[in-house]
Image (cartoon, rainbow, N blue to C red; front, side, top):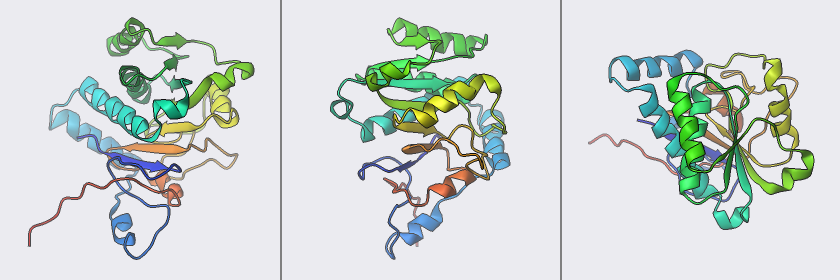
Length: 241
């Protein structure tokens, strides 16, 4: 049920849905087929999955996190990262849960992984996800890396805020937002770049500019600002003649 719409500045590599950085007559039809969701539409899809299809939050979270880990692994090899850490910055909601699952699977794939989780929730699901990471020797930190240690990190996974986010960013998340904007470590955003308006896009004062955007289910309207990015792979249902 979780589809990945994968937008990256990197070399052409496979994932699941498709847009192109270089549009031409052969690709424009597929590009126009991409469905962009409003915040309300994205919410309604989740409601339908929960109520009509009886998916649980942890099921969808596991699918999303695993899909994100696969997308990252397809684009950034362990050799390319030279054993540098991937730091997954997790927020208190479902997007943060996706990040915790993603961190676990990246660890299973052999990546050096750490988690920055500044605002934890007491819900059992998140407690269990955190426990799983700890049992797999994934370092969970409460303080952001010092600037002197930035060269130890090869990637940042932005799992702070999902499609339910409404600006502005709360003050206790400003430091991690500044870290992602200013550290010059490549950022991968899950679903939307944190701090962006889901429909309007990047805030006027400037926001995170991820090297890669992974959209869950379908890209949100803000992803239209990434039309210059190339996509990777397309799964299309062909109607019989």
